[in-house]
Image (tube, rainbow, N blue to C red; front, side):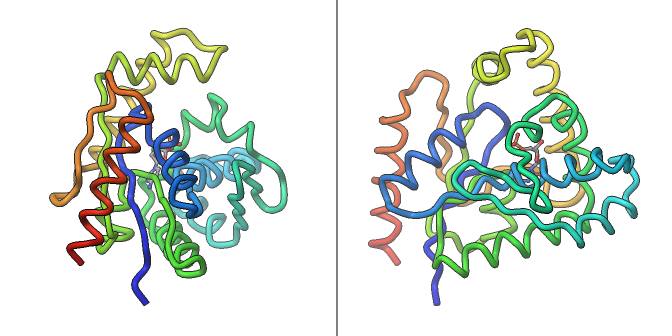
Length: 218
Ligand code: DC
């Protein structure tokens, strides 16, 4: 069976979640935030005092972990972690966890199983079009100016100032783009959209047009 997967990739603050959620609603498809899954692993490690850079310990913990992502609620081994996974400790630890090949393989398998169960979905992350779903019906890569991305994130996390958020985004960009296993990179066949000065509605309309064209061409 062909899955109807729409892959939305891009760096932090590029607008992935907003666009992916709106798109899922317009298409009546389910939405998966794969960043929340990596954040859940980092949360689980911190909770039991495992050093996020201890590859073997994090790998073992990951394979035994239950992660449920459903309508914005994220449960890790049955504990609601929706708020904590967005906090500064998890945000600091997540890139090193996401560079762990065992973690990545496990998350990839879970993401594929999620889509198979639903026949597809709108899936956002960093490697969705390049690695997890190379046959996605549409691959979108969102970008935005570094200042715009930091500004958006600073508005979301009200307890941190702009400079702190900008520095954290720059650090995570470098780690996400520089890691050996499935780094953040534009798929060669992705539609690249700069979201800096565009409204969500315009972006979603463009993606829907591209999706119609891609599905008609199949
Ligand atoms: O989108 P986000 O900021 O919640 O993602 C958190 C981290 O997870 C991010 O620094 C990179 C990583 N990530 C990844 O490596 N692959 C994905 N498909 C999604 C997120």
